[in-house]
Image (cartoon, rainbow, N blue to C red):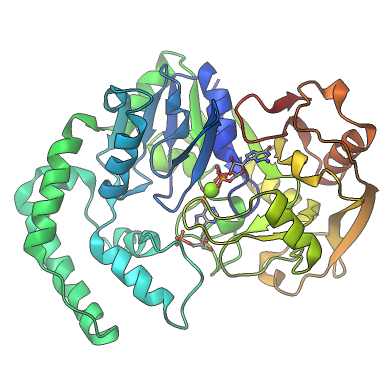
Length: 415
Ligand code: GDP
Ligand code: IMO
Ligand code: MG
């Protein structure tokens, strides 16, 4: 069975925890979009590991991790991550494959992202160079992993890029120019180390599927950050929804056999842009504190608010999700009455074009005081927690397959 795990909100839904939890039943775990902007947290045995580029199911030694052609790769962050993971598996490099089609994040992408974020054009990016790297990819001047192994082409393309980027750096941002020699040497070193891992993702995935192996597709970011269907322009620069799986790995769309959406029991967003149920008062502060809502990649405080069922109806529809996993239910413990947005004053459908003017219509359900973080069986949830989950199902039209009640791998309840 090939399964896609996708975020149904603005990212940070807990996808990392879910992928790690499910990965023991899979042979291949593939990322198909995004790059080091992702921060997927896995907690096991009391230790916390944050994955940025590497599929986070690879803590399981049975899993081959694939970074697909639809991703953008920052080699420095990638190797730092590999080195950190060697504590868990000294031979992890043997299980990681990087697509030769993957576009590289270059130092000038990061610099320009940082400079642009200091201007009126800021949208609150992670400053990892993601948007600029995708601009180059679609502008057909990007440098792909596979290009590193044709030194002449690489050198030519790098020179062209550096000369264009130096214009921007000097003329627009009044910054120092970059040296192509230094970057060339650095990326040649990366290329050497990366070489045994570089592969054709389309073949790896094809072979796995022909042999009926189980493939776990790991989405990064969330549907509301999708470049087309999210809250544009406050989005990331890739397609974050399940349709992206095929294009990001060079496999047909029908490869996705099951879609599991992941949503927090409330909503968060990091970075700028509309957020209809945002609570800038005490409730938002409480969620941030009890949920430790600070970005896994940048450490920025996350904006917090109530669960938005109308938004989930939209994101589930565009992802083809019929089921979802609710995470962080434990964080709501002690909330007297829990609000859920079920539509908006202007109508019940979420419309990304109107997102900054939508006024939520809320219902309220009784909260629960019990600490649910030790619950491992659905029968042990307090009645109010069960009612909350049932209400989410009713207003989203999705079946809740699991509820996560803590960051650790085993803190999850099958419903
Ligand atoms: P991702 O980007 O979707 O993988 O999510 P992040 O890792 O950025 O953020 C989710 C945060 O919530 C991480 O710190 C997780 O360890 C934590 N987390 C995941 N599930 C739960 C849960 O059920 N309860 C609590 N309290 N924390 C959780
Ligand atoms: P995971 O995979 C939450 C947000 C940024 C910013 C916008 C564009 O951990 O869920 P970018 O650096 O991608 O150009 O920034 O997207 N963003 C995320 N927010 N979780 C993420 O990833 C994110 N990746 C990017 O905060 O608003
Ligand atoms: Mg994250």
